[in-house]
Structures are given as C-alpha cells and as structure tokens.
Length: 77
Image (tube, rainbow, N blue to C red; front, side, top):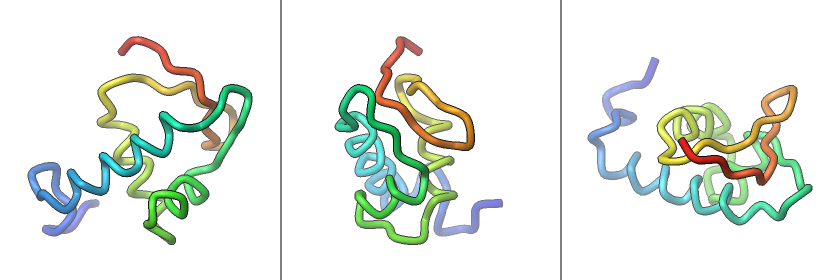
C-alpha cells in the first residue's frame, strides 16, 4: 500500500509518473523492458513497484508481455 508520500495527489509522485510514462513511450517497437529496467531508466532505481503503479494510472494502455515486461505497443485507453 502506498504511504503518505506516494499518493496520486503528491506532486513528487506525479513527476515520477511523468518520468516513467516518458520512458515507456520511448521504448522502441519490438523492445521489451521489465519494471525494474524502466525504473532505472527513469532515474528511479529500485522503484519497480512505482512503475507498476504509474502504468496502472497511465493515460494510455501499454502492451504488456508475460512476466511484467513491457512492450512498446501503445493502444487507446
């Protein structure tokens, strides 16, 4: 469960979510990354769970492969 510093209304979380969404949108077609890799690329090493939270609240759906890995497929939400 998210602590007080990790709520959707917290500006720091919003900024981190934007960084995560930016990384995911930049994944080239055919490339696959896991949540930990996305977190590291967003400058959030060790925050794989935060990536999962951010993607759950993403404005667009991202394609997901098996094992919590992300593909670059963007689909309307």
